[in-house]
Image (cartoon, rainbow, N blue to C red; front, side, top):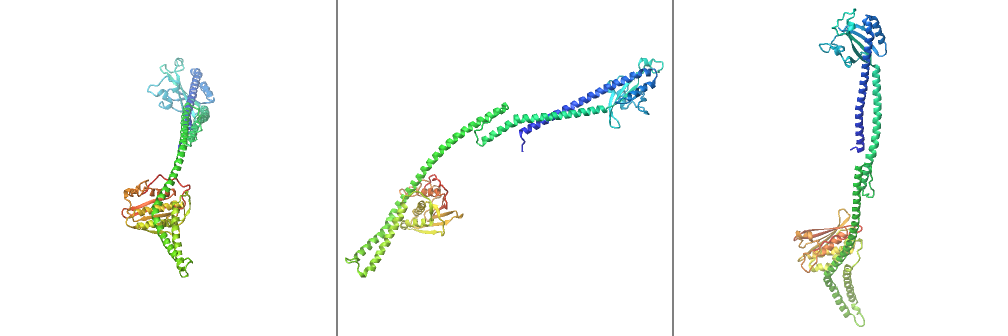
Amino acid sequence: MPHRLASKLILALALIVLIVKTFAMYINVTSQEARLLESMTLGADQLSRSITSATWQMMLADRRDAAYSVMHTIALKQGIDRIRMFNKDGELMFSTVPEERILVDKRAEVCNPCHSSSKPLVKVDVPNRARTFRDLDGRRKMAMITPIYNEPSCSNAPCHAHPASVSVLGVLDLGINLSRVDQEIASIRARTLGLGLVEVVLIGIFAVFFTRHFVETPIQRLIDGTRAISDMKLDQPITIHSSVELEELSHSLNVMRERLQAAMAEKAQFTQRLESKVEERTAQLRAAQQKLIQTDRLASLGQLAASVAHEINNPVSGVLNLAMLMQRILKDDGIPPGRVDEFRRYLGQVATETTRVGRIVSDLLSFSRRSKPQSAEADLNAIVTTTTSLVSHKLDLAGVAVDLDLADGLPAIRCDASQIQQVVMNLVLNGTESIRGGGRITVRTRTAANAAAVVLEVADTGAGIPPELVSKIFDPFFTTKEEGKGVGLGLAVVYGIVNAHGGEIEVATRLGEGSAFRVTLPLRPPEPAPPIAEARGGT
């Protein structure tokens, strides 16, 4: 997971400050330590020269004991570790440490400042005459070597046998304890480290404060502003004045926000206008659908008129014949006693035939009656039975037999019964018109596999539909009938009604063998019913 920018800046600043401060503290401590050692070196040189000066007269007078006594006294002072005197051959002539007897090799470290080359140096500068080392007890010591020169007053003295050609008579080795210096250096280091840590902490606090004030807070405002824009909260301006760059960025975001706000307002207005137009067009399409359904109903009614007239003619002719027979039986004095039963039989036949005529006319009126679309519980099997009965005479005239395969216990569906009746009517008549020279139409009903819908199937043994025309049979005003026998609205109306009820219609056809239309209707169509789909067509 990436870290926050402010945290990275604070960490980077703290690291930089820590590195710089550590380097500065190291330089400071090192320089102070060097100055202390330089001061100690100068002090040791001055002390060493003072000792040689103090003992010069005594040595000149050959008062060695007095000179040694002075050096013993000086060695007792705080910080003086020891005082030794060597002759030019490296032999220890005097030491404030009792019983110390050594002969120093000229190749030893202590002799390197003067005897590092084949010819001993006579003059050696102060830094090269001083050395620091650690004693056996681990404490640091400083040793200052001071040459004792063969001055003219010494070489010409009657008590000395040092020729003038000898430049150096020996050396004075002054040992100084550096414990107090080391303590001071440790104190300097501690103070420097403490001050450095305080400075780093203070700089870190200021870095945190300024970073959060000038970086984190403005950036958080930018983040909040961009989130508000992404959430489409376009009424929240972004205000930042911490820096020119961030202020310019916030200004750009505000310009983008204002433009987006204007675009969204324009989009909302456009959407509102579009919704109004869609509602208006939907209402118009619904009205057109109802008109189309009614037109198709009237067209179907016209197709039924002739067959219904023939069907009504037969019972009416029978009633007329029966009326004439009963008129002959009836005398002026009434019905002859011997023909009452015959008269009653004729009268019963009249009642039967007139009932048949009434049923035919009632079904025809029910089909042709224009009613407002309404949804109610309906029995699909009853709708199929009534519709096939209504068109039975037309089917008989066409030599088409109807087989009903209606499932028992079919659940009721919520629909507009008159519109579903028109679906059955159109599919049956469409199949009848596709049959030449007699055939068969099978109407089946069943419950769908998911038990949430019912299925209506209308199969015929007609000519079938060419494969290249299957995709067009639901297009508006498409028909394969001869001119004057159809306008291509039958299947268009079927598609519209089925779609309005939330159902589906499929067709399976084979050329020369017939077609089968399968209509699936849900038990409970969606509420409210969707508007009519874009116009499809019929055969």
